Amino acid sequence: MSKRILVTGSSGFVGKNLYLRLGKESFVTGISRNDLYFTDDVVDIRDRERLHSVLDDRNPKVVIHCAYNLHVDGCEVNPLEAAITNIEGTNNVVDWCKERSRKLVFMSTDYVYSLNGNVVNDEKSPVGSLNVYTSHKIENEQYIRKNLKDYLIIRSGFIYGYDKKGLNFLMQMINSEGNMKVPEDQIISPTNVDYLTESIEGLLNGDFVGIYNCNGNESLSRFDFANKISDVLKLKFRPTPILTKDIENKAPRPLSCVVDSSLIQIATGIIPLSNNSYLKQIEETLTYY
Ligand SMILES: NC(=O)c1ccc[n+]([C@@H]2O[C@H](COP(=O)([O-])OP(=O)(O)OC[C@H]3O[C@@H](n4cnc5c(N)ncnc54)[C@H](OP(=O)(O)O)[C@@H]3O)[C@@H](O)[C@H]2O)c1
Image (cartoon, rainbow, N blue to C red; front, top):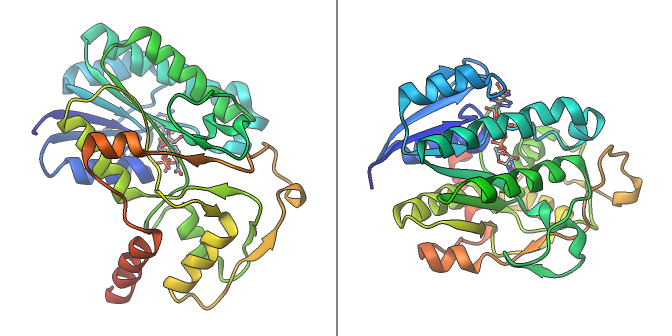
């Protein structure tokens, strides 16, 4: 379905993938803080006046909000500075959608399930935070639900895909040359970025509203996933296992974030492939180019 869509944070990993996918069918504008690729207007979301003026000019029917300070340790060290982007900046986006009655898609995190221990979380599971980054996301979700009727909150995590200049886990592995220590006691549900963007497109096409988990169907430790990447991509090196307690992170990380994403799969009819299949596709791209 063709729509006018604006993506914030369009120079980032998720933003650029949405910009490219949705741009095939819809008129998509990208805004980011720096004039990089996939950016039509340079806008800092902390600058409410400029943000609202650009949104008025571009007049999107849907705003997909990906601009964020997602440096989990950085948020912990400088929570007030991070809040200016994550809370005030996000509120600036939400407020415009409220004033103009436009749909908002907000990228949240599966870390909202951090306090639930070793269980499978659906959208009705309790939310709570172990760190500042997650507390910002929970505050954002509450503000959105209070102020908007037409919204999608996408809870996802550990998003991976080939991204030449990016820093997602897969790219860190490829670029690490064997120097990577990876926790063996953190259980994750990795999410392929193509699956994520296709699912968001599916929700928009069906005009769905509400909160949706969007992760891959497979749960495994970060270390096992790292080994899988090494195997399928035929990397010459393997990660080194480490325990979470031995890592000097500024922000605590959950040991288990396992997510049931059946709601979004039923809504869109899109089922994620296995990580092996996605990694194989990436390996073929790497080999070809
Ligand atoms: N990656 C994951 O595994 C993951 C998992 C769960 C949820 N998410 C969520 O998905 C969203 C996108 O993540 P990502 O991986 O694409 O992050 P990313 O690659 O770091 O991209 C973030 C984008 O936000 C922009 N940005 C940051 N501060 C800004 C500001 N004040 N004004 C305007 N733009 C600003 C960045 O531009 P500059 O580079 O110019 O600063 C960049 O374009 C975030 O909300 C994140 O929390 C990501």
